[in-house]
Image 1 (cartoon, one colour):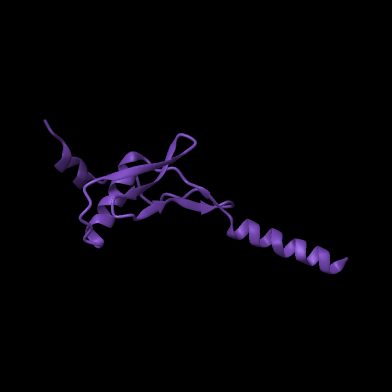
Image 2: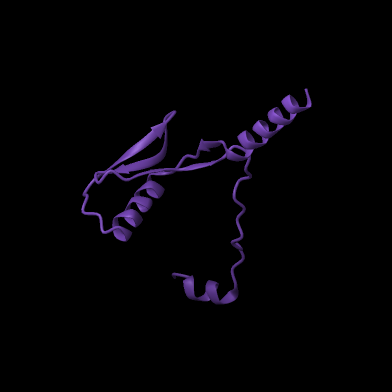
Length: 98
């Protein structure tokens, strides 16, 4: 019986840490990822196709056969934003359009 519970626990840990789910992308993000693929691999393809799951874009497929599908672990926290929203006086002076 202990071996059965140990096996079940090991499987549960593997499933929670290894299983992934689809993460939606915006059309602009998918296009940007395709452009990055296009430039880094020197791909000559002119088109790409959206990969959708449940009505949301989760990746793209290039004409050359390359596929990118955005996935993340089942247990994950949303990304935190480290960008400060404060503006300094210099920015206010130089960005005012009168």
